[in-house]
Image (tube, rainbow, N blue to C red; front, side, top):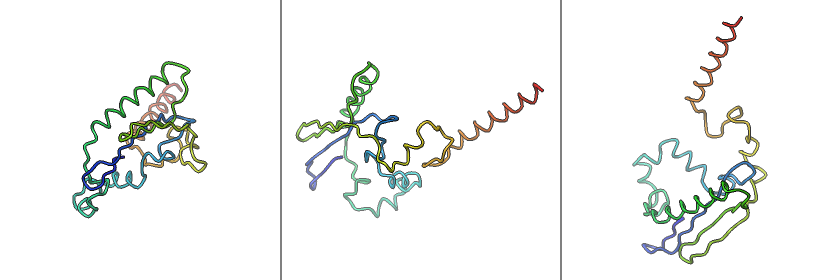
Length: 157
């Protein structure tokens, strides 16, 4: 998150975390806003009339150049991946880097909140309710496989 006072940079922080079963999901970690996801899915963030009515300093229209920060995030992601792949290295948890001070905070992974929507879905693939919608291509593929399997069974009889 980049913070400005007028045109002056007063802070920039970024988080890096590994998400997997047994670890905190992105929603419980506050890594995204479900309302913004909904606006993106509805196409509002591509609608100039919608964007024009937002405040000038709204995060959705500020257009900061965050490339240097993104490069740092990518480096942290590579290190978290290496920790997972190389063996029994501990879980780094949530790493929060503060650009202005150069401090790196580390919060242990606490797991998901008790009311998390996603924890009950772990290991269920797409057989359960889909909180973000239906993938039409995947649905068609499943239907095609079912028809092929039924045809094969009928041919064997």
